[in-house]
Length: 192
Image (cartoon, rainbow, N blue to C red; front, top):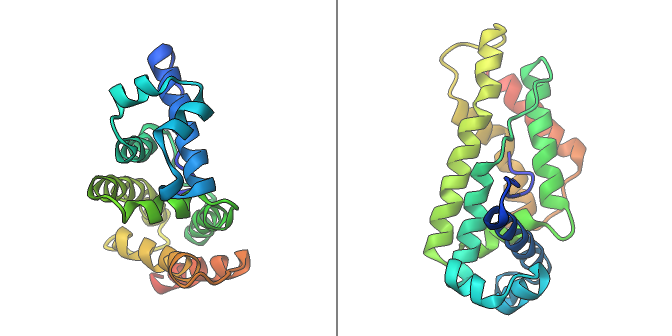
């Protein structure tokens, strides 16, 4: 659902500047955390003058919000493996890869969202978008006759993915890819 937050690269100078800045924000945040994220560091890494950053984004929280909002600009959708179980395993593998990457931009963004209300709101909008897109897994399974039409997509996705976030992010405990797959299988079995 959330592999990595990346901005799309439409044409034009403004889009190029935004893309360069958001790539720098992503890298700085992943490497140094929210406390190490500064306008000067982003300017240096992106090659964009700090005056431009202050004019367009104004603050570090403004940079973080734009990074999160850029996640809605992509074309991500869940893989279609041909089965509910396979689709949920694929989703969990993406999440697992994003949470266990070193450094993990996904974990850094989650942590940073607790530091500013605007970022928290932007992250909530990001999650809403991802859950809405990932509901496609459920509608495909219903169309294939695998699960009942009344299956709640949000609840099923929470059942599959929440253990990953809980164990890796909250408890800071390792989780193998096989364990992530297992949680997806349990979720799929719970609605059959």
